[in-house]
Length: 424
Image (tube, rainbow, N blue to C red; front, side, top):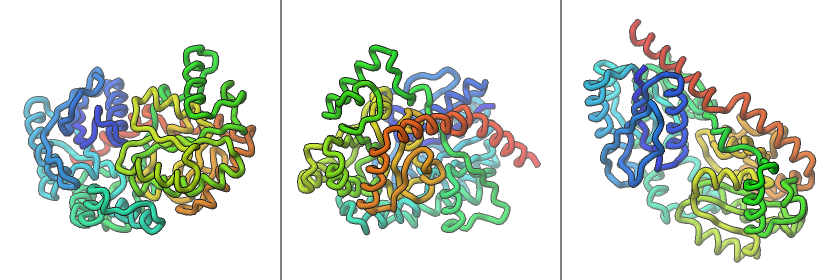
């Protein structure tokens, strides 16, 4: 098959969607398909992959509006591509591409059936930010992107509605997301929608290999960097004296970093040697550091910008625990990357996170409740042997259910079903 993926994110723009598209495209190409990516222009180039070509199109650099601008340019590029190399199926990554109902119908009539991946929803994003604001995460007006979502989500949701009603097939990235679209987007009675949770690169995100001298030296250097280097930690064992907590995600309100900081005094009261590293890009870095200082935990909190996958993966495998306090996700890849790295996860007790995380591989806490978060973290830190067992089960869970090999196989079948449904 010749598969055209219309994705607003693609490396070197390494967002969640960009990462998924890169890996999924590579695995589909390895299965013998041709994949063409139509994405936004960006400085730099993605790592080349055999069988995968990239077409960049211009876009308007404005919050939310970029989805419509990019969508129009992507449609023109798709038309040209199909004239040159006939396309068998079009895979759109919603909500970052905005097409009207008429445009979806044109694509299906003149080019190929459309499979639309539902990567969360604008309405869900808006509600997540409202919930985060309720818990004093951040003033939304400080971030133009958050403000744009709050004020225009309902308007841009009509493009998601078009994708829901006009695509040959839809694929939700979690049962929670599928339910969102049922609740807020009123899909047609004959709506065809499957649920396929994204996987992770289990070769990059993997447990610590202490037999590899170079890797172990990197582990030791990382633990010393964050002042979390007791004997157990340096040997790669679960640490109780200087546990290293890791939080990964954009520094925006709905990721819940301020809730995590409010939990730190109680965590440090029980584990004075604990340290927290937050990794992410965003507008809230200075705000978070000020809050940490005000709470008296500034000495135990480190904030790092985004980093290459290999360096990020080293953080995952070297940490004792990953904490993910997000208020809204379409799926949430960070917990799976943590499990793949052999590190247990503490996250919120709400879907879709509960579709991946339970007490066998981590701990759950009440969304927005710093006291409950602290208790969950302390329960885990108090049981190093239990954490080690959770780490092993977490890795097994990823390998059994959440890999790009699984995703490529699922999407190949979905593409064929979409092609056959349009032929009938």
